[in-house]
Image 1 (cartoon, rainbow, N blue to C red):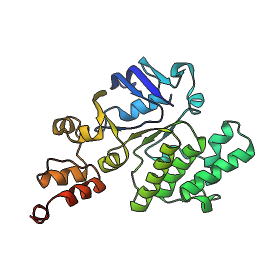
Image 2 (image 1 turned 45 degrees about the vertical axis):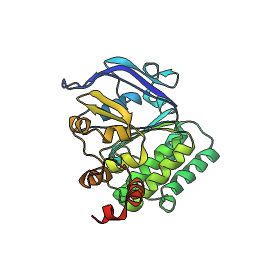
Image 3 (image 1 turned 135 degrees about the horizontal axis):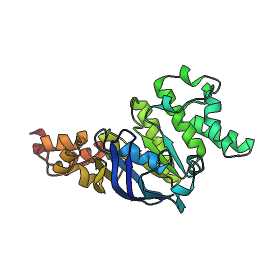
Length: 273
């Protein structure tokens, strides 16, 4: 599912302008990261895309739908938004009811609801917690519960707001496996994140925002290789890029794997030095 925004502007009731004539095209099946400092407009843009906020000006197209002509509930069939804080969206009394809520609202038959429920719970290792209250879960489990509820909707476009917050190594592995599956399924993924290592590992296209505007829309290599752009967006390069810089390399590997490949290709004397 593609999403396209044209000339979006949005001002909050208090007078703060969060978006200024923003235009962005995300083709179907692509994976795009939104980065920038707090207050850059990333979350506001995401909420406008899924109909949670209505822009002052401009248009949003979700596939062939003009978002102005559809409610947030209708748009949820095409785009699912996962909040940064899962506690902002968990409301049912059991894990099972939380994940089943969306599919049930779609009017799906009971057998399909159960199939979606089971798959989503298994994906995030929550199958044994069906009868538990969401607030009896650990923070990581609540994060996964919000993701499972979104996954059960099977929307062709998913927006993730700070998906790595609070995750340890094993939790991050589960998230990465989920994203790999969604790519294979052709799902369009839009992620908002301050975790530059995660972005470098998972996304080829990066959109940098600042002050409600788009500063850059380029490949991860181009964004993380441009010191002036990183400074303008108040961003820090991924760890491997910073390490390569400290070593005096001209090459800027984005991931651990790419760093190791570059390291092994260098003369042993250089590596020892």
